[in-house]
Image: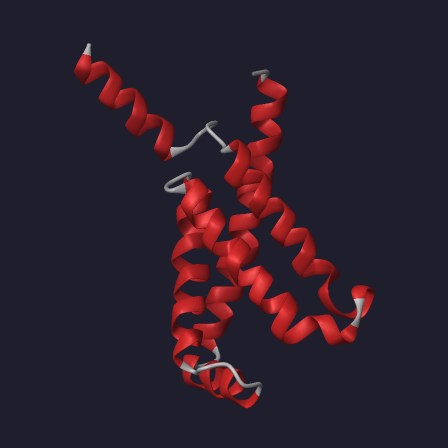
Length: 133
């Protein structure tokens, strides 16, 4: 695996984390109750706003740090599929789900390929290997 590929995956991981961190922060900053109310207004149970907001906020931090990268990316992908099909699909490609689709593909890429460079996951693995040697 070349260093160029790892640098590219690092950049994807950080950007994905920043986008989700910012969106999660916004949900809580604006009042998560308001987000829950909006979820209910479009037919989604309001309690899911708490789950989505928490995954976005905590997951954004985790993925930037490289902690639980594949699991967090999988959760981000699930959120994006939900956003595309429940909110943005009717608005069409350019005015609706194009950005969510890009985030979904980034998340899938990280699920499939991981991102080891400057990740806490990699430090943990190396620490376990050192102890087992």
